[in-house]
Amino acid sequence: MGSLKSLECEYPIIDSDFQNFCASHGIFSVEDILIHDLYMLVAFAEQQSTSERLKQGITQILSIIDGQHQPWLNGMELLEDAQQNKQVLSTGCEGIDMLLQGGLCVGHLTELVGPSSSGKTQICLKVASGVATRYMGGVVFIDTGNSFSPLRIAHFINQIPDTIFKEVKQNILEKVMSQILCHSVFDIFAMLDVVHQLEYSLRSQVQTGADQVRLLIVDSISSLITPILGGSGSHGRALMISAGFLLKKLAHEHNLAVVVTNHMVGGEGGILKPALGESWKSIPHVRLLLSRDPGSSICHMSILKHSYMASGRAARFMI
Image 1: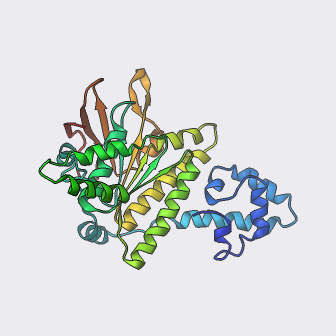
Image 2: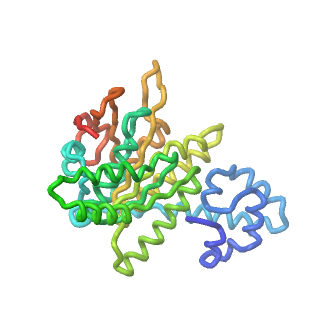
């Protein structure tokens, strides 16, 4: 998915007339279609002299969205894919690796849920530095709240045992920092643009044999999605599901781990629960609950959901 103009070559029905019609209603991309009132858009199209062609264009875009979903796979194909392609990435944090029996599942979307100040961003920075150090692979960090801290990354790397010469440690620091690419985004559309660019880049890497991106982090995805969920319409929810599916598709097709963070909100009886609701709940392959006592560096992490493990497993560790 992407801008409407980028689809014109492959789908002639999405021509300049259709693009101009959409632009007059603030629609410039496939994602814009998802949050627009489709009934109203069709009603506006019917008022035009080229109404039939405009409605065909709308139908074509909806078909493109439907076509993004993965085909059915039988059990043997899924087993072979899991055995051959989907390993785990060590996070660099022994407590997390023990809890997850090795680390983050490649090809999976892992969600880290926790209240404010529970250490979600610190875990993301720790994982970014750990993956970049251990695997010397690329890490893409999508920062939605100016939370990315290169100084914190450097601190994690400088914790390497002192038996390593300072010159060697400095070389490691420079190499690791060059492997981490940070994008600051402040709305869901900017995030989707970054993800689409990454997808294009990953396809090029397959062709050129360049170093593979191993990890994508979105900290935090809930701050991008929450603003579009207001109102009585379902378009915000549709865009949320589309974004989640795109992240899962990226992880699966390009063998990388994806980590997103989500905040907590008040539920019934004042009990905290993950934000984004029931529709989002089913999207991540793995959901981890993080908590931390005020003023403490000890974190508690438990498994809420995992494709391979029972929920309820927990661990304590220091960050």
